Each structure stands twice: as C-alpha cells, then as structure tokens.
Length: 361
Ligand code: SAH
Ligand code: SF4
Image (cartoon, rainbow, N blue to C red):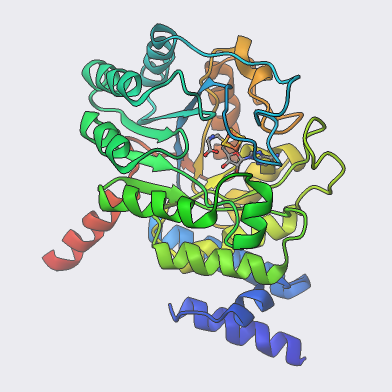
C-alpha cells in the first residue's frame, strides 16, 4: 500500500511538472502491475496532448562502419577485428538521400562510426551537397565527438540536428566502457552542440553491466537538465565479438519505463522507438509508441551494407529496401491508431509554434 502511495506521489509530481528527486524516479522505475499500466498510459496521454498522434519518420543512412573508438558494448569498436567494414562514397550517400526525399520523408540522419576518412571538410561538402539538392530536408548528424570548430563548420554548412548519446551519466561506468575518453568530454561536446544552435538529441543505454536503477534515475535527471528536444534510449544488447559478449541484455519493460518517464519530463520532445528495442521485442515499436514515443528511424542505407553495420547482433529488419521498410512501418503505425507526420517534424519548431499560438491567444 505504501509502495503504491509513493508511486502515486511520484507520478503526480511529474505530471505537475515538478522537478523529481532521484528517489522518486527510482520508485517510478520499479513500477509493476497496475502502477506500470498507469505510468505507461500517463505517458501516452501526455504524448497525445503535447505532440499529437503523428509518428515521424527519419531516414537513417549508416554511411561508414569504420570506428576509431573502442566502446566496450559496440560491435563496431576498433578492437573487433572480425567486424565487416565499409564506407559509402559521397555519391552513394547522395543517392540514398534522394530516395529518402522521394519517399516523402522530411529528415535524413547520417550516422557512422568515428571514421577518420570522413574529415570535417568532406562532411561539410556532403552536407552542402544535400542542402543544395534537397533544401526541404532536415539533416541530422550522428558522427560522434568533434571539436567546437568542426561542429560549427558542420552547422554552418547546413546540419540542423545532432545525435550524441551520453550513454550513461555514471562517470566511473562511462570511463570503464569508453577507454580513453570521459563523461566530462562527452558532456562538453553536448554543450558545444547546444551553444551552436543544433537541435540536440542525447540519451542512454539501458541495462549496461553494473548499471543500477539509481544510475538510470540520474540519466533521467540529466536528460531533464539538458532540456533535450530529442531523446534516444535503447536497451543494451551484447555483441559476441566484444568484451561484454556474456553480459545480459537490457530489460525491455525497464526501457519502456525510461521512455514513459522521459515523455513526462520533456512533454514536447521527439522520442524514437529504437531498433534495439524492436530487436529484443517483436512488438517493441508498437509498445514504444504506446509508452510516449513518437518517432521511428527506418533504415535507408543501401541494403547490401545492412549486415555490416552491426552495433549489436540480429538487428531487427523491417524489409529488404527502404520502400519495403516504409510499407511495413506504415502498416504498424496505422494499426497503432497513429498517422505519419509530414515535414521535418522538429521539436524546437513545435515549441516555437506552441509559443506563437499561446501569444496569439
Ligand atoms: N559512433 C556514433 C554513432 C553510431 S553508434 C556514436 O557513438 O555516437 C550509435 C549508438 O548505438 C550509440 O550511441 C550506442 O548507444 C548504440 N549502441 C552501440 N552498441 C550497442 C549495443 N551493443 N546495444 C545497443 N545499442 C548500442
Ligand atoms: Fe564507435 Fe559509436 Fe560504436 Fe562507440 S558506439 S564503438 S563510437 S560506432
């Protein structure tokens, strides 16, 4: 009974947009049974009120699987000598972008390992080329850590958004999992991106070995403190060719709770259902959309490369081409009682729009 009381207090406090304590967040993360149902439906309700029934599609182009980093959990880590490595040429990327635009999507996400061949000068040229050909497309980059000057040049060239997860807010765990780098460094990159005016996405992994519920509560506090317009949260999935091969995968329900609480903390944000969630749970996308998420990122990489971009094994696939992926997704979105969002679907623009509406009244 007192457990339920504590849950109710914690949920009511979040719904009132009060700053939660770590203890309250841990309590919400422990929700089971009726409490769990209530948490998920509260997030679904807030999602509907704040961002509506649209599910936004982002065309994901995984343009290089080379990586200089050695993150313990990731199949693309430099220490994995059996990883298949490929790099799309600028012409191949532009062709994939054209397909994304032709399919009517409003955003392209360019993601890669930290590949030294892709200097900032080359990336700048690519971003400019995309903006020239498809000025209506929002461009999101997800290429890891670069200097302030590099991020500035990329933003100047036309990159609108940037995805860089902080992965875990526990500095010690971060250092253990990311040899040679620190959480401080990662947070500095995020601050630079925010200062430069990018629409910034970040978030964490759920179920990393050694990660506690208190750590996840701190991840949520960091997400809230950063006021992120985009939040990516997915379960950790062990990859057999990494030092974490024998670790247990992240929990699906715990991931859904993280999504739901994020929606309550940042009601107007864009929250994707991740492929990692769909990989562990056949209904992961639908469950995620019911728990506060409103975005999905179909794979727009040429299909011949899909197998080699192996962050984790058995990546859930929708179809064997972008068209096939979109058809499957459309059916899933419609079955969930939702519709596809039109245009770039920016959370920042949405906020301005809301403010404008508010001022006009
Ligand atoms: N190199 C860039 C982008 C590619 S990795 C970067 O690191 O930002 C994109 C995301 O994949 C990472 O942020 C990480 O959270 C996720 N990822 C990597 N390995 C994973 C695994 N084994 N299970 C689940 N997600 C993983
Ligand atoms: Fe490289 Fe990103 Fe994988 Fe780390 S998570 S090894 S930076 S691709």
